[in-house]
Length: 402
Image (cartoon, rainbow, N blue to C red; front, top):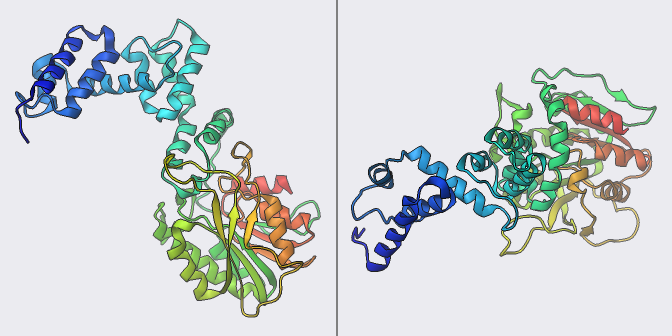
């Protein structure tokens, strides 16, 4: 790299250093000036690193400089109008939040404390946003959340914050996994079993189910209890693909020869999942579920608005009920703020699939019951469903819903 500064760069360095000389009263301008010097390497004519420049020129340590830069970025993320943080200490706690949440958290600080804002008060509000902040970070990298817009994720903040104290006092993860006997709720024909599908499925009656309808947890974080050779599995797709094949192979012996299946998929994992399904069952179609809403993602590209559903049969194909419909299903997805499970599917769509492939009193198996929507749809259509769910909190929810 050429260490010499051209005239434009030297003038820019001088302007930045004038701002810094004015002192830390203008922390936003100082942070922006330091960031500009760092990004453009305007220090290179005299110093080998940005850290050495800050130390020698301004007697500032790296951690303090980073705080100044982060605080200035926070202020730039806030709305142009309204009260702004007056000191770096006021802005500092907000750096722990994603940019999309910083403005909402700061607005709450202003509403609650007016002109009596302190670092500790900002810190308290930021802590309230931690759960939704974690969810927003997850949404940016996990396919299971890609269907949600940023606004819809933020809409869940209030609900999540209200449940925070309750969640701290409960243990949602039962690592020992105590099995319950099949539970029939309110004299219905729906059964929910708490346990690991890999252990429960072999105990069920073979050749007795007319439909496999399930939404496997592709790519999820299995710190919630799924184990792999005695260890808690992580969120690698390899682990969840292995889990899926284990469960699917145990479902097949339970199906009648002419049983249908619907397996919800994710387009990102089609190369891993489709071969597994084809190994054990016969795929007839890949249905497209139009969720009728554009999910979050690159705002300069096309927005994802669909999921896929593998449809097929065990050994013998039987005709679908009713008219010949398109392989494009248009059903409004569950409003995120009303979700009781992160991958919840709309009940009306599940009812549609159940009616197309089964008759009243037919039996359905769901090895990943989640929030219990398949059991609810089965109950609504007079079918008999057996659902298996690992987590006690979801089993409790299913019982309440039934």
